[in-house]
Length: 420
Image (cartoon, rainbow, N blue to C red; front, side):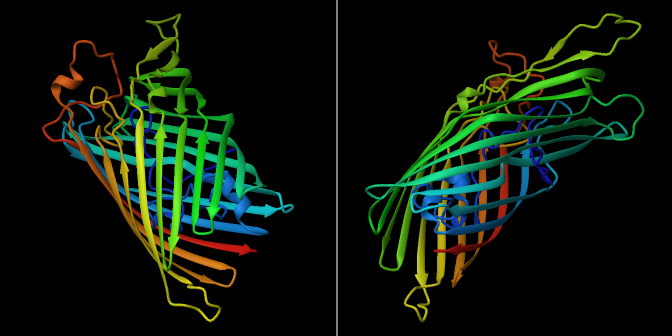
């Protein structure tokens, strides 16, 4: 499987977006309420949030979501470039999915979506030249799933995940003679992922849910590339998308809906995965040996809390209220280690997201729009990066005079179709 996305962000070797997960996805309907979904999702985005929600979608559910992230980071990539603001990253993302009820008890579905993506490019002068320091990384998934309606208003879902990872890295002067410091592309696929989900509706006005995403480790490779100014063959490294456990709830009272989700991501499963390759033979190195370039994370586990409210207004002729106004908030805990900071993603500190949105339902159609703003910062000191017991990290950022920070604007629109 190969899903191609237009824009993504990583560190010098990996993506740091509060770990690999971007807390601003999906869809427009859910992002309007702070991204809450685990307890009540009942459309095809259940393939991403909680596969048990497929059993709640009706006879047929189709969904297309488009998400546009506009991001700036500020960091210190290396000794020649402290306290820089990245160029604007424009990252168009998507989710397309479908669910179909085979019987009263069984529903199946299929979805495709990026699961982690961001982007940053720095440009800075070195002498008379301008250095470009850029990384692009994509985590994308295709997920078939099956869900079951059980007694006592319980729903159980299981999703199988095929994960595709692509990394591009460049650091140097474009078009200059000689080799740049870094110039390679790697990719790989993992076929062993899964996601579990459970939903329960104990009362017509109350929905509860739980979801679990299992850890995947994907090896990405390429036959040829440049690292540290040398030509390498058979370059490879690994990316771990860690396990995640989520709980969610929603309560509907009169015209209002209130939702709350909490997620625990096991980001400590990312410690260190070196970039490995074999230099090409040269006159000074006729028998090259396998070399490793250190890339250290040592992340900590992370808690993400989401909350949202919805107000349904403008009663329709059938007694329903087709217009919904929404607002939400996300707190995303610290996971990046200040001893091994990334200049290309989330700083070593918590981030927050403010969201708002609206939706309109007409017959079997739903249209939703949303906006989100993510912000956060974290200190990276000389004492952090020069601690005597630190491991060598060739791709980490350095201490600057200002904190690292991130600013992301998210724009979302989705269209869905449901048959009861």
